[in-house]
Length: 313
Ligand code: SER
Image 1 (cartoon, protein in one colour):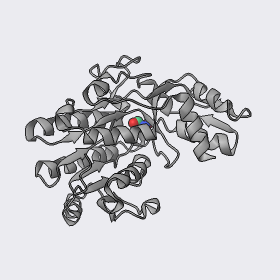
Image 2: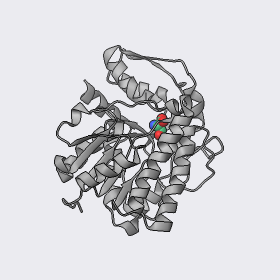
Image 3: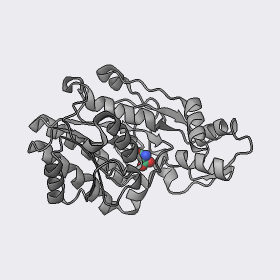
Image 4: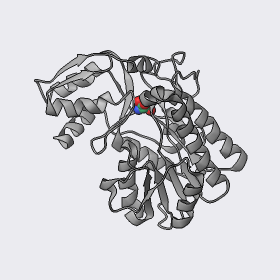
């Protein structure tokens, strides 16, 4: 399943997902076969070859691919929902042109496989909010969500037209202890652990009853590696697969944290991110991922909170 001849390039390897994905893929392929690329150095990935790379620089990207004989690209460089709203034109440019540059590499057969993440942000205020189906109304209201929705269609189009082997997951909010999130609406669910341990209090930028789907990073990384290694015929959806994760509100996660840290106190001061959160699903139906490639998540809210507090403490 893990061909040691393969060479992996992770673009945006210094981000929240990239760091953990690089570490896991290094265990499978060997660090020297997992090239970490980002616009800034990544000290925690000092065992991996590093390339300073801007994904918008198509020529530089091709040079890196040729230099290392890269076969698989994981494209993680993007602006997320909250920062995307503050810098819409750049968010569109980075999220779309970065994807085109990588899909073109695959079309031209420089590489054989592409991973590109999508998100619950593809859904919008008119989408059914509970147990959101794989196929449903999708009218995203953030630039990030619009770029992910368009990106899904582009991935599918490159697959149908040119046979590009591109695979994708719609991640819920991601929660891990090894790396920091940046610029997302779901980031509160990571910050809350750091603040609970450090200050025993947290001011949440979403209101107490805002339910969102979230996932432990370990599950997200495992899902990513699994979908990239199942036979191509199992990947029936070439847009992006729903993943359910765990649905909870700020109040519910705070209550779970209080079981470990009784003094912990949460207050609420919703900001512009509230409107983004309100436009997203509360829970997700992942039956296609289960059926097509056997996906099964491990964590629930209790084990997630326990794991985060233990590791961060
Ligand atoms: N976690 C992301 C965000 O909040 C959603 O994909 O922007």
